[in-house]
Picture: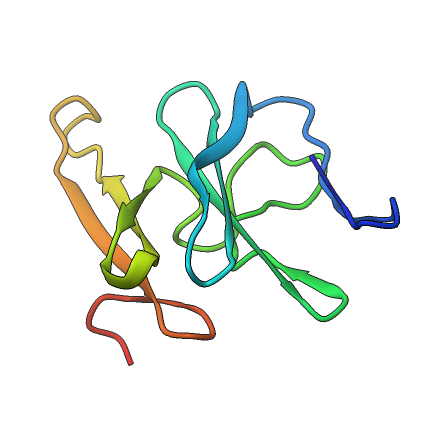
Length: 127
């Protein structure tokens, strides 16, 4: 994956040897904040990549791993997540987790919602 600026310069690049069978623009690919949303599927469930240009830096909000790693974001929203429409054309993120107890098929699934606060994504109830 590469983010290329209008002058053709690579601003961000990630290479994965495996673990990202599908990588495509989310629908919608951007929201009212200007953040860019991508969907990926490492083979089981979809996840969300969120990118935002901040000056000469690309913020990923913990949704990207380092190059060469198997696909799992370093933050809570990167893995097993989907976008959710909120008011004003802004997308939030719903992340889910299965505790796999006693097994993944019989485990409890929990959901956590992350909302944009103008600077970052925060879990519902956080300030």
